[in-house]
Image 1: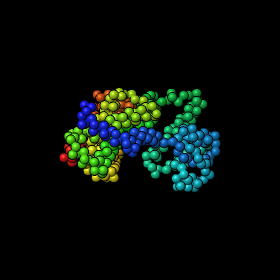
Image 2: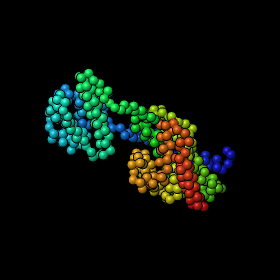
Image 3: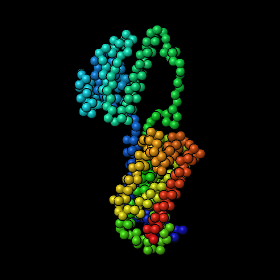
Image 4: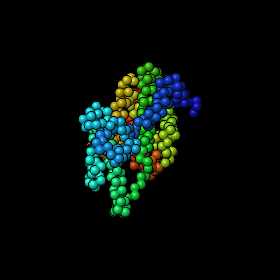
Length: 377
């Protein structure tokens, strides 16, 4: 085995990889950097919301109400304005995302057991961000209202909980702290794995074509299957090593607990990797240089990113688009990696996402190998 043509060809590929600093950076450092950077920024939690306050009441009640926003940890009370126009200018200039206006009769209405109005003006330019901020505001306001009601009922010797007809006991499974990082970081493992396996394979083969060494390999005694395996196996091993690296970063650096099987994660990751290798080989057969290959990779990765459910829930997409997502391999591996990390489920529950991955991997890799074989023959 260690004296075969295939072994020496694979050895040559590894030596060639080690002599190229750019390829080493892409293979080893890029996954760690991508996961680390994306892990910090890929969060759906919104904090440090710049806020302006227009408090006309200036009472203990109004200050307590304003402090509830400050103490929540989401809002930064950066401006205290004296009129509505000043708050409007701050919103127009983009210096604040939220303006809170407490009217002059705020405390008087509360003392009289009347409904007191508070105006919250929210910058809705980014609808998704505005929706999250709106939920924060509603939650804080509910807590303030509930606190006032408790004080009123306590004055009459009553407990507000005695009037609640339904006692809701809420429990959150799989992600009790509701941290979006726990949901996003495992997905980044899938994204990085696909990018690396595709880019490495494409770059290595296209570089051979640019240098004119591919023709030299064709006339060697190497059979076509040995040439194909020699090109794929080294980068398959590198991709598996990258899985280990990003897994360690996710678990040790970000503290994402793996509740399922490590062996199952790596096994299904290897299956998913065949899709990236196949796509990389296919791209190399239709690209004449690295510029063309990078543009093709960008064209392929954009639908993978948008339609896989990485950020946007598939259930919220129009029905025709949902049908289109069925041909996106990344969609299935995202469900797998999140299921293993967060839920700890096994192959019994993941099979519906596993068999499409196997089909995609076999189909894409076979198609790419046949096309590559035709090219070299």
